Image 1 (cartoon, rainbow, N blue to C red):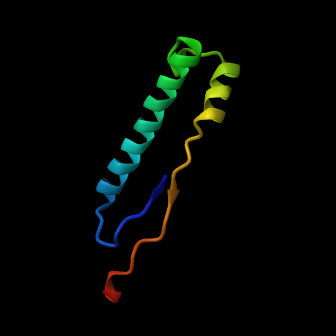
Image 2: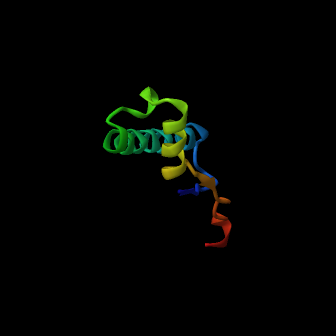
Image 3: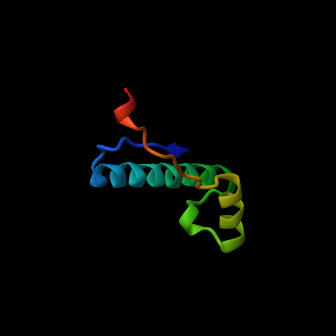
Length: 71
């Protein structure tokens, strides 16, 4: 997931979006974990949790904001 904001974006809004993305990855890890192991992600032993992290890596990149002065 690539997160890109505008120069005018308030920091608290940016953090809220990051929190929502992190939450979405956590829910997805839970769903995969339930399908594969029958348990939520946070109930797994370390080896199984590592397998889920490999299957569902939490990769959130931050792109440079657009320069609105060039419009």
